[in-house]
Length: 186
Image (cartoon, rainbow, N blue to C red):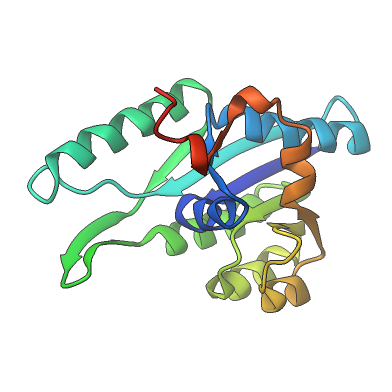
């Protein structure tokens, strides 16, 4: 049996921030925590593919952020997480990432075509609903959402959802960066 965990980085970070969490270090521990839940339910032979979706600004837009993001994505890849990158552009509100949702939606559909029986989507963005419907023709689609996430549209269209708080509860505290401590952690 095959499963994939697809994480929209910006949306996931918004959900973490709402819980007072700055981030997970390293991210592989979050994926591994969810995979351990899946293997307990579906068997140890379950193969799980890890994917992260985000974007990197160009050097010209923000050189410091460009190199920081590049190191972050390289670390993800070293940990076996497949990184899919959209692009950034600058507007009056700052840097905006584009193409990430489309990449994730396309992968959701493509993975269903490749016989992935379980597809986990960590995003409350209702833009994924058409891709979720197409993927559900061949796979079970499960959302990862906060317990109080106002993502009712997503909940109505997926087969099930997993509580983000339940996944966090099995993570070792050393891998959770709390917002109040973020400046103290190197």
